Length: 316
Image 1 (cartoon, rainbow, N blue to C red):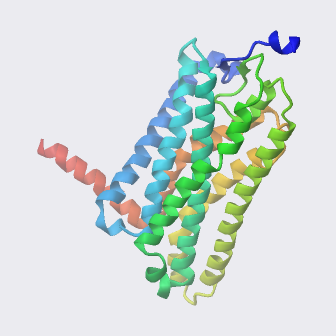
Image 2 (spheres, one colour):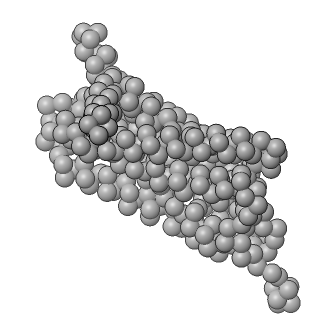
């Protein structure tokens, strides 16, 4: 009882960021500010383009719009705080705000897993069951799938975040990371974390594995169907409709699998920082590029979008 009385609970954390790179913080600030600006602008352009172009009012681009919205919020939960650590001496974050950041980041990441699975199902129906596509992938169905991705994503991390928030943090309070993530927080707890670590690993593995498995199964059927198309032009056209999504899936699941489908203590925090940068900063930036370059309809629509803007400026 006496030990508990003398324990000082942590009320705020200090985000260390990248302490070994302090000498180049101004350069890192400019680099990540540029990436963040491009990410928000690129995804916002896709979002507006899909909304304003009637030719893109189909389920594939409807899901892409949700993905763009997720990417904007996903990176915005992390990057602004990281940028502030490069230019200010104040790197503290209140315990409550840290838990909120952890929950929002985890929720949006889970939502993206579910949404990518829904997008794979959409491509499966379009390529493997083209005659029944319009009857199965109705507007109501696409709305339900997108809503399910958001709701499921925001429900999934409730237990892990609740478990972490109930741990005892009595010092030190320096988070050797650039945001509040599970692994660095678990390292700071002065209470037993074995149950929490096991629960988080099992839940993360279940979410990632099930989403990835459904996506892979969809693409096994998709690729099998494409290979049976007699003409090379037909195969190329069919594959082009899912190439962008497949590329995003490979990048996204490759990084988060290395991060979360492992015991929390297996990799060093420095290695995990690099992996985290890939899927929190780099991947959201690549999505607009991938979908614009690999999809002809989107590419043409984006060109027309900028053309309308230029014409509007010329009129002024």
